[in-house]
Image 1 (cartoon, helix red, strand yellow):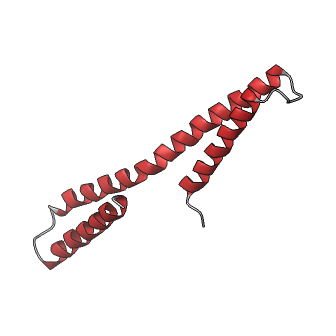
Image 2 (cartoon, helix red, strand yellow):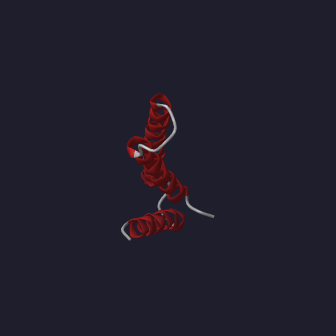
Image 3 (cartoon, rainbow, N blue to C red):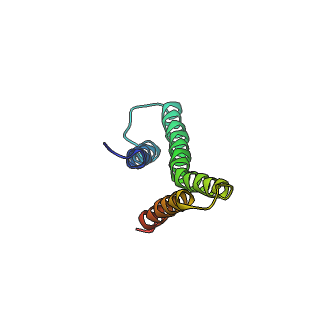
Length: 103
């Protein structure tokens, strides 16, 4: 299964090709209004793609914020092995995300 971001990047490339094609190709048998419609639609769709790429990249940030919220809640748990297990697992996953994010 392909990642959403990979698909969106390919769609963006295709939209850029369409924009260039309709903007600079003088041998198209289509009205100027039709070409403008294609260019405007490609531009709008590309902005939408950009929005969703940014949104997907923020998922990791939101996930890490949720981990931090849980870490704060753990402070109310009585000290002991259970609490240490919770803290260690959250830290392990947080480190794993950081390692993958830096590659």
